[in-house]
Image (cartoon, rainbow, N blue to C red; front, side, top):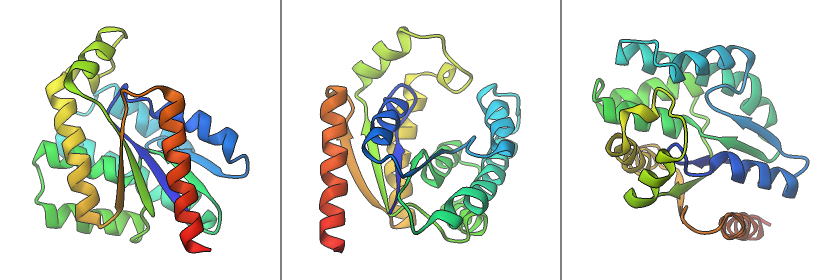
Length: 197
């Protein structure tokens, strides 16, 4: 099973990935962007907001995605794969930028991924109030400096992206305790595995 943990900055993705790694010690743990050696460089470029063109930023994400699927995802599809972000995020950011129409977005991502997408996406969903608080507690990167309104638009676009790609979406209230969020994710994975077997 290939799952992705999605959510806007400060939603707690990294925390949940760490917790899930303890429950699934044999799983392939990865992230996007940055799950490959090339991806590390691309991630640094994107987070530093060095690309002035939104199209360039989108194409950087696509390049990372193609390498990530080729190097990490495709060779391990028979295993449990848990990814911090996925193509869903890339499409969500592109939807908000508004540079490409939806049909082209999907086609370009199908090309980059070879039509390989997560079986299920878990969205850690934040409220405006909680997001504002969390942003106030940290030093902001290039994406976070775009503000809470931009990030909430991304959150809505993540939901839209799962629909465009026809991926199962599980929304989880990210204002819950960390352990409660982990429990919800684990129960959903267990239910999925039970229905498969």
